[in-house]
Image (cartoon, rainbow, N blue to C red; front, side):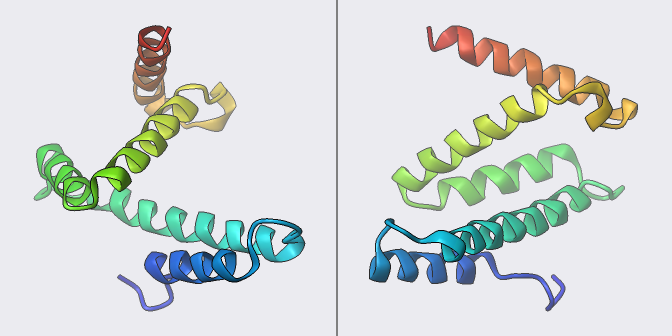
Length: 124
């Protein structure tokens, strides 16, 4: 990991302390910056995770196993919260317009759309 990367845990801790001290009312620019910081940190870490798959020695199974171990090593409530976010990401990716992704990734977008539709149907 590059030292210039934002430490996700630090961003979370800073935002948690901010909300603890000031609450959720009238945050204005500070709230927007906090959300931007979290989004930027998550984006950097996800890019790093995605880059791991660009290796001839790392298999999809290894990545999946690492993701599941990372999830299951956390508090049960946090596991659920993360999975909600992951499902939301799958649904969002599945609903990308054709001009928002490279045609080489069409199957992944379509698979995410199928998963999204199945989740929506199961929740009815």
